[in-house]
Amino acid sequence: MKVSTRGDYASRALLSLALHDAGEPTSVAELARRTALPQPYLEQILLALKGAGLVRSKRGAGGGYVLSRAAGEIDLAQIVSAVDGPIVAGDFVEPHHGDACNHEGQCALLEVWAELGAHMREHLRSYTLADMVDRARGLKAFSETPLEEIAGPRRG
View 1 (cartoon, rainbow, N blue to C red):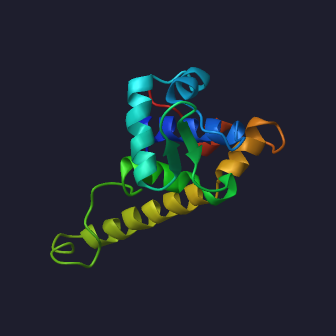
View 2 (cartoon, rainbow, N blue to C red; view 1 turned 30 degrees about the vertical axis):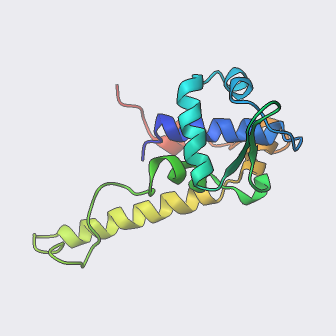
């Protein structure tokens, strides 16, 4: 799985809202400044997040965006799927449905791809915005495992 720019930007924007949560709306301009994200693109992403019920907006002077619920109730899977759609390993049909198993060995692979998508969703569900706030503030340790061991060698 490759997290899209939209998924990354959405996660960064909501993390910023969670880090500075004082109950007051944050303007898009301020959020763009804090996160170094392009404001026009950020506005589109915030609209998608609002449509998914992850943020609320307030118009007018003092307006902006706030989280729609506590940071501990919003996980990374919700954020990524709000802007990118379902978290899956690829655009494959479900195994054992319709003509999915008409080709040699295809269902065996389809089952693995479906399992991989489920693992990715579950892994992202295990991280809430509150967890990310704790990590950003140094209250929760980052993984002790080197990234190379987790991700494998980079391909150049």
